[in-house]
Length: 372
Image (cartoon, rainbow, N blue to C red; front, side, top):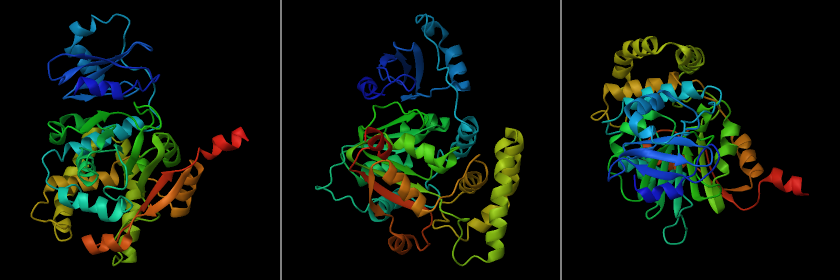
């Protein structure tokens, strides 16, 4: 991490300024401290861990760096409480993303296809040379695949990927990123940045995995700058299957997800791991006949897909009208929706989910009503 990057950040607890305390010349490991609330935050692998609640990683870091922390009397790790289900979300997504550290594909996309997805389907409003995007926040970046793709699709912008999952700390995509790409471990409900500070806030397939998609939307929308944009993709209504699927397969899939998800997300880790290890070989044979890149698709990709479908605590589904109302209530005018036709042309598969871009053109509706 560059020391100068700490000036871009703020304390997720009190929004105070952070002081950088590197342990080595490269700031591969070190601390960020907040003098206002006396909280310290670890930096590991060049990535600041700016969670507002304590996790096991803080205990390990404190044990390994006890001598350095002794030089900071009165400072402590974060003491906040996670949101409902947030620990479970962090745990299951850390397990899920930890599987793909060496994979060449992310779900069904290669790195090149991710850039094409952004340019031709999701961010069609962007025009190089005429649309100004200087800063991008990728909310829920996984291991960083989309963050890198965003930096390529919208070149020149400072691009920051955040995620609550701790597998991000070991991702090969974070080790030597381009100079304009950075990563942070943080909760989307307590983002460590000044409000209204990003020209583009991007979140693809993430907010529906929180206890409240609408509350997550409101928390993230606050960081869209004046005249900035917010792209959101969330699950649409119904179980996501190809149009050719039989009603029986759709019903089975819906039941498996509705019953399996709550059970697996709450089960002990050894039991959860044993379930996915047992299911993966069977599912892998079937998926190999359907994926776009079977020559690159490995068992770890199949297990990752199964975990993404069945292990997160939450997976809420929305319709377009509901999502559009959220945008309008936050002063974001609908500018574009994802192109279903272009998606099918590119990937030979029907688009699903709700993909919308809103542009900041007015103050938040609730604020305006309160002022009146």
